[in-house]
Image 1: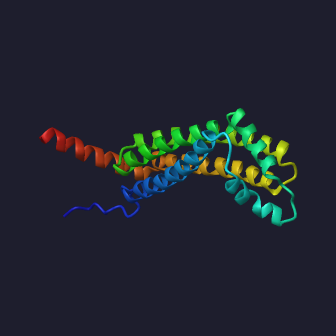
Image 2: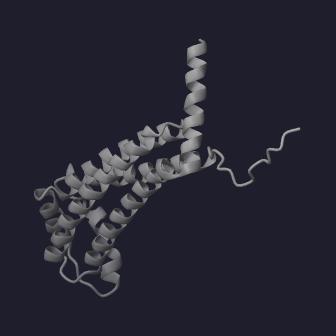
Image 3: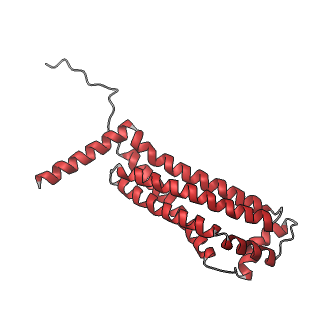
Length: 197
């Protein structure tokens, strides 16, 4: 009869954690993709339509501000000349592709997915914040004390926070002991299966 007592506190592989993080990263990638599409569309349009601008300045003007269509058009033109939309859109677009690809690998229990996603989050963080700074500076110059200036400032913070969170989530499975065991187990099973074929 064996005297060995099963270790109740032994670290067990956790496959569910990395897969959950992969799904969250996928959602983050889609969010960045939508923002990138909007920025690239703005970068490709020299002027916004009157209806678009009226929609954007409607709320501030209802709050007692007096923003004109020409004023907002100048703001849009300044951003395009400074490549603000293009820089932020390209960074978020490239970042979203990397995060999306990384999430697929992570879902398939490949640790390389976490590293790819961290790279994508880094690109989104740096390029996104730089693009936001250009847009914020243009807003301060053309929209003066409008609430839209504050909106663009908050957008910059959100861009940074979301990118940082994506990077932090992608790092978690790479440093978590239970996730590492799950990666090793999944990849060793696949290796044995391939060798048997």
